[in-house]
Length: 449
Image (spheres, rainbow, N blue to C red):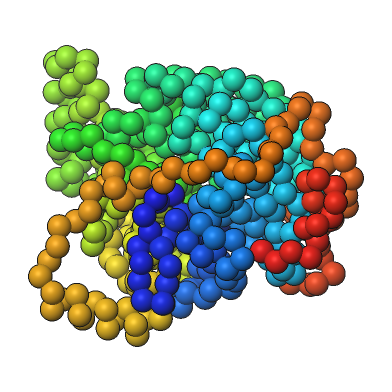
């Protein structure tokens, strides 16, 4: 999630971006003064585990699982990617590209940098550039997804800027796997399940969400978010077991869909009103036009959340916290909402906790009380909220890449830091990737993130 105008609050700067790490145990936020990393392992407490004020206007910040590796891109130098070891306070390396960086994705094998018309794939263990995908379809939002599974390192990105085609690329073997004709309209959101065997997508219309099998590209599920209006879906996220999928947009509603195959007609089902209505719809659909019957056969949301605000961009994630399924929503006004989900019956989710990402809870409580005393003001438009400010020209000469570019020297990341389980770099002797700066001068060694 990127926002052009952050929410200023007491004791806190504006929020520029927010992203959950690969297993939704950590939240990273970019601000006008730097970036912050939070641990999201408890409902009642949100721990800020690191804060940096060295780099202003951070609009991309991505953390590799629970390790000390963090990638930062700033509006002041939008063509340069900085890789830090935040616990040591050192810069591991930095890379410059031929155009503005729009997105960065990480897993334990690959680091992917997405520009508007090209994609760069690095080996995360030594940061060497492995592959450059040039002349990709125009992708001004930097839409892409990278699976996090240790063996299935799949990359998905738009195959067209006019219709919703998805290219699935094998980032391990550096080869194209398949093209999925997912939607009639251009893509707005894509995401992989944790195993990399499912891919969810939504188009710019935002009414239908589809789930496909990977690598076959077969359609498994189709969900209808709504019929009355088009919306901008900003976030899709699978649950860790891929049994649920959540979708958030610029409206006040977050939808959660359940990925379950319907029982064959011959099997007995527990009688319910919803089951009865479903059978009636199925029976009636055979007499209706294909477009109408298609709408009637699409599944609706299993559970929903009514946010306290509308018209603001947000990012959502499904996680298991303290052994219970939760929905996490980080909003562009600097709040993190945590909801309980009923995995059996669904319905309206319950808000159990709300955290402020800036300032103390006491300061925000006082602010909320004062706001209640003031007359309500008109909400800011969605376009104004998510508009990204235009960056000025970069004064430094920034070089692009060649196919065989990348790191020429450096230390390889130890294998134990990229095991299948969670990565925790608590020991100061454990140092991930290379200790080298892009220009080879080594200037980044002592620089604090």
